[in-house]
Image (cartoon, rainbow, N blue to C red; front, side, top):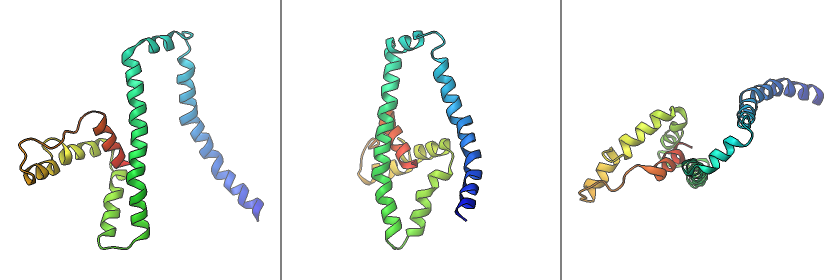
Length: 152
């Protein structure tokens, strides 16, 4: 019985592993190998370019900050939705899973319409607090981390 189960598992896993090798490992290996076509020339150019180093550093900062912000939002939300029963739980669960079902571009545009400088939530807060200008602006690294964190 166990042998049959293992064989079935490998029959499913093997094509998945092949697909991952073909679509993830091979393209990444090809890009890395291609970067050495000119020896270390491309790597030296990259290291000498302040703009390239800044882009790399910003990408790393956004990645790490997004992971921690997603953890700070997702873990308590999962605990709340998984452990407690309260009115509106089903609606909150649906709203929380909505970003996963939407294409990324739609999510970014939705954030602009809701939280952008002239967005719905922004205007409600602005009028509620009697402010002349929008209380926040969605731009830069903070905005990127905010959108990624919510959608993840």
